[in-house]
Amino acid sequence: MARAATTADAFNAIAEARRRQILDLLATGERDVTDLVAALELAQPLVSKHLRVLREVGLVEVREDGRHRRYRLNAASLKPVSDWLRNYERLWSARLDRLEDVLQELKETEPER
Image: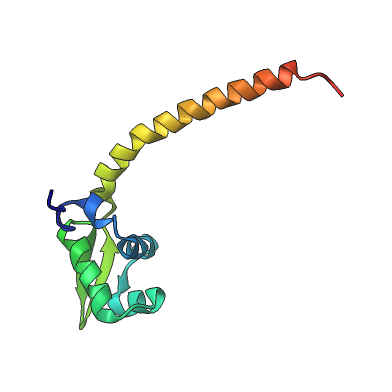
């Protein structure tokens, strides 16, 4: 089966660790490519390539600021990922609640020292 293009959706785009790092940096506010290159310690063409992928799926928006291009996170585009993860959060919450009950039962049946 052919692998889906990284530009198909947010899930494929964030599958790459460097792109997640870029999103983490942009979560703190707008940045230009120079800032991202310095923070990531990557070559500028590589950062630009990742930004292009993130722009194509709508996770990042760009704003012209004179000669500079400023990038910002479009957090609303992460909603499908958040919705998908919500099912697993419920699963883990239920399991942790059951674990808490078991631990409480063990504590109640443990002889005092």
